[in-house]
Length: 119
Image (cartoon, rainbow, N blue to C red; front, side):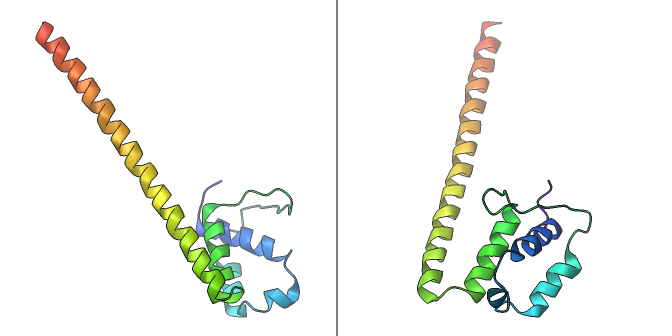
């Protein structure tokens, strides 16, 4: 399952089928039409209210739709704080991975130098 916007639009349109019509009406028709025009017609997605996995891009679009059309200012601040914290965690994971790679590279270089010195 490739994480593309075209696939995410399919998931969004499927999820929106489970949202009450009076809530859907808060989203401009142009935006929903955009999803329809740009969706991947070959991608299949079956939404299950109790247990569904969505693409990361779908999650991002849902958050964006919620912030723009459904939440109030206070909720937007909380969402922004959570997004910031998640971004910080993501960056820390990247730093950890880089540090681990550098550490392992250093250990390998030390072992190589030791073997080279023993020759």
